[in-house]
Length: 372
Image (cartoon, rainbow, N blue to C red; front, side):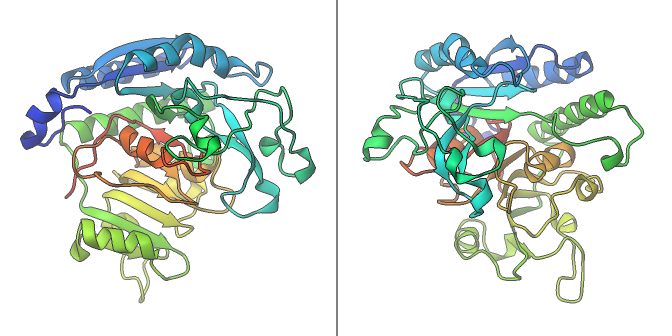
């Protein structure tokens, strides 16, 4: 846990300083370097002890790169720290695990899902022996013996045999990869694909810097979207108790109407958003988002749960500082306005012994959410 922009909490947080490991794709565009340097400087100014390591970009031909990255870089540091935060930047290896996970309920998405939990559990008994190809799922969810995808799908922190076998959660992971953001045409841009992606990283770190330095703050504590026109019960209840009815906004469409006399963008920026298919996932929508959108954007939509999904990537390009998939079990947001980092919120979410190894935090795990 690190220093906040909230003066009253500075003293307590200084005594609980944690380490920050930044793993950067070794071939990340050099145009991003100044922005990355600013991010590191901001983190150090807040009291983080920063170490930066470069690692090759992932390759489909190299199915064990995540194992080497874990064993050589992340796990030793996780075991040596009491609260290691890891910020992974670029097209780095993404582990997959699971046999019959089904977070969005579609028969063609059952199977293995992206899981940064692998990097956070060095003592787990990870196995790669099961075969779920009989499910006839989409290729990315298929798990075969020896393919580099693991079998585990129950996180640590519980009392079941599977949960205990995961060992102790020893790191808080954030994964920032904008390589799946789409083509320049889809974003209405005349830039090359290389420049478009580089600029997306630059703008992300610009928003990150502005948030850390107080140049923008959330206008509302919580936003809740649902295309059913009915607020998500558990999230609305949580919001009312945590930020109050006047600090909460519900929306069911991306446009204003007689029944919704505002757009979600007009009500932002939010501290945290939970969106159930209310906003489009296409880049054509997110290309119109101007200014900050949310510190943490929790999303749940059909086929928008796994790594690389547009609904998880596109908000990071234009207005969010972190996104995350949220389905079974939801997220544990306890302490979100009390100084916990996004990484710690992710940690307590996956550390409940549930079949939620697919829960991944995309974006900066060191950020602390401020209440308007």
